[in-house]
Length: 120
Length: 114
Image (cartoon, rainbow over all chains, first blue to last red):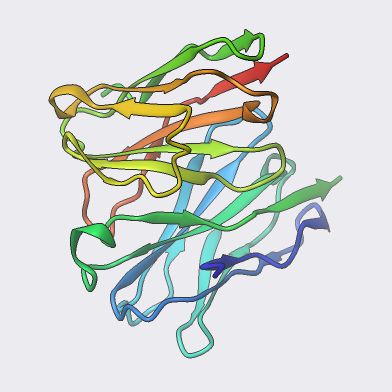
């Protein structure tokens, strides 16, 4: 079963607008972490933001924020005031916790990604 | 501090030939991952190490792929023999192992099998 689902293969946004990239996840583990990565055309994976399952507040890092809705199992990335340099692939990922012992711990699973294009 | 180092960056080989990829993780990181990323898709886990132990290799095609992590530091991923469908980017990542810490990725090795 797919653990991480990103339903938007591609997004096109005007520069300076805000954009929301969707991510839903599936887990029965009460302890998990959610990550967003950016992958520009150069290929490197750049960590953006982290949200823990027990965190009471939504994570924020500069222009990035995470809209975490635990009951809906969604962890959408919001980029405010988009810039041309934000054009890239964006991946949502999940690491499940200690419930299943070492075999489950630390496993980091990625979604299929969303290609974001910022238009001038 | 140096990041995750992978080599080579690019490799072109003929089908049925062997190929090996090398990864040096960030110092002190116990967890090491090898991922395969096909064009336009997300990374897919091949194998995960905790120190020198391979704790998750369920996605590794064991008939042709092998991996090792000697002394719990550097790691090598090998394909023998390579097939056309193995063309992809092979990513190595490492992390300190805590649930709330991100994985750091290397630049990847782009493999083309012709």
